[in-house]
Length: 195
Image (cartoon, rainbow, N blue to C red; front, side):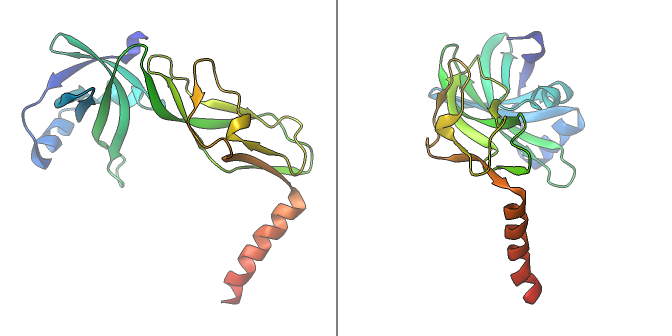
């Protein structure tokens, strides 16, 4: 755990849109913490600090709630669709050593065979990982792959301590020839043009 994930949270007693709006105007973000059979705890988080932390997928916060330490995984972030302001955050209580179900972003690395197109069919992969050792992403290498090659979830090399939760047959990457890909795009556009 790093220093930048330590966050001081304030318990909040007010609720409703008006109260939440005032919190955001004061540079705070309303949040709720739940899990492990505990009652939900409503808190206010420091806006700027938390906004920076949650840019990473599956961010883990070390909360200080009036002197009580709590580990929490960011489960959901609600944003204003127009202004992209964070309106609310849902946090899940986790314990050290506990495994959590998460979705990791997939990053394609390497160059496929010349004249081919790499199509990323799924952008995230469902996995289970220890709450305090969640990797930022999963890398999928397409180095030297030729036309017709496929990579499924079962083929993905997962970091140590991470187990696959997705269907092993889930298609992650498909490699096709450039001409075949261009033809399929043209045939998809042709019916639309005829209408």
